[in-house]
Image 1 (cartoon, rainbow, N blue to C red):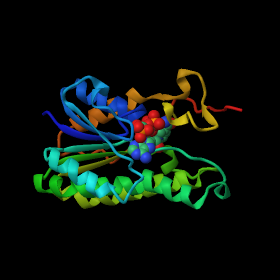
Image 2 (image 1 turned 90 degrees about the vertical axis):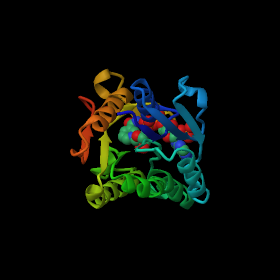
Image 3 (image 1 turned 120 degrees about the vertical axis):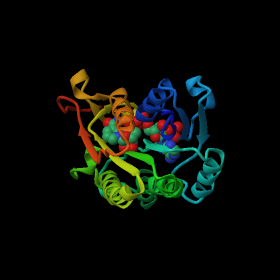
Image 4 (image 1 turned 90 degrees about the horizontal axis):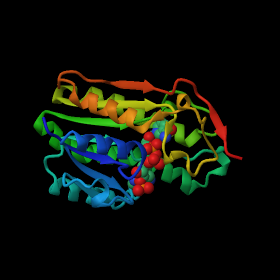
Length: 234
Ligand SMILES: NC(=O)c1ccc[n+]([C@@H]2O[C@H](COP(=O)([O-])OP(=O)(O)OC[C@H]3O[C@@H](n4cnc5c(N)ncnc54)[C@H](OP(=O)(O)O)[C@@H]3O)[C@@H](O)[C@H]2O)c1
């Protein structure tokens, strides 16, 4: 069955790999990120929307614009997000709010905007990219972990709420993935292929979940590299 998927974070990393994979399978993709271009995938089944998801004031209007243009959206893969790490007192109040807005609240807004049409159709998929940080709090990760714990609670409750409506909700919790996520951080994964998942691995998982028969739901999946090695850049 050909789908129309909303994918956030399409300009890089996991989101880009997911969009590429779905387009290669003949699905249509509506992509969101701040820097996306329509030509990004050289595929006429792709359309991009430049949206700053941390701007919650304008987000509902932008989302209803997308819903009106693409009423057939039947799945969503939530990949946009960022990491910011440090001791709590190193965060400004504004940085705390912005990280929660992007990593958690914007995802809830998008799900909220799509859910009525999914429920009317009695089908639809929402696949969220969480993190291993959703499973265990760790030093210097107060706000990042909180945003991912919030997302995990949200998806568990939403999954429970949606089953009777035929809507499937999944959370994928990756360990370290080889993407631009680490570009602005003072640490990264080790250099061996054993130390990082590839974004395409996550994309393959997303495609498999979407292809399952509609009566089966993958609630949550944790995946990680064979060996976890953290490398500090300085
Ligand atoms: N990489 C890892 O090790 C890892 C591990 C576990 C979980 N994750 C999670 O996986 C998700 C994707 O991360 P990634 O590794 O693919 O990182 P990435 O390569 O840095 O991609 C992040 C994506 O999010 C988009 N984005 C960031 N801020 C945005 C904003 N304000 N508004 C709209 N889009 C925004 C970026 O696009 P623009 O810059 O164009 O806006 C980009 O497309 C994140 O939720 C991250 O927490 C990553």
